[in-house]
Amino acid sequence: RRRWGRAGGEGRAAPRCGVRKGWEARNAGGLATRVVVGDRMEGFLAAESGGPAGEQLVLPCLVDLERFPAVADRRALRAQLGLGERLVVAYVGTAAPWQCAAETVALFARLLQRAPDALLWVFTPDRARFTALLSHLPASAWRVDFQPHHRLAGLLAAADAGCLLRRRSVVNRVASPLKFAEYLACGLPVIIGPEVGQYSELVKGQGLGVVADPDRPDAWPDAVDALLAMLADRGLGERCRRAAEQLSWQAFMPELARVFIHRERGRQEGRT
Image (tube, rainbow, N blue to C red; front, side, top):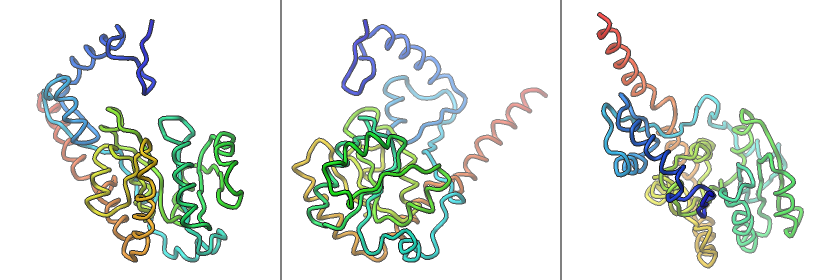
């Protein structure tokens, strides 16, 4: 019988978990190059399985700046989409509980009290579920849409902020969500959970958004106030874009080339 933890995965006491942990430990310690999405995952693997046999490469989930280019005229884009001067918060994701869909809607409802003309623009395949979650709010305050990934950049740039709420958990603590870099690439500050990989600290340290704990609704008014104050900063969009450039394939290509060219040369030398 399976034992399920709060996050929906098998508990550590379950036999299958033990088998997987043993398999992971054997493989994680024997790889020629071990790729991790961040320093926190590196620390987690070191504690669980020891250090790598060879090189370790930190490779976050990276944005492609060619698919998420800077928008030349954001005001024109907003006018084209009929957004005017409204405060627009974007959410990209599903209605899965671990993505804190209900909490995102509840947090937006708090924001709506401070900014009555605000709009929550949801990009999701779970349109029916989000429509139900949002049905208690004025119809003018939300929009549920679904767009293929390659069209997101041309729409997200019209928003003012992006939502990435996550709970405190081991999985989120070592994560590297791609949508974080995509929001930043569109010039959006991020409303982020308290322990989302290294990104929560990055947000606080570089002023790239605000931290909001989905399990602490009593603290949401402070997060809302901080966001509204931050949006008055004219340099915010450019600061977010510069941060995204450091989390892009374009920035990481020289390091990737070094690692894999080095490995290929090692293979060729081993054959001669």
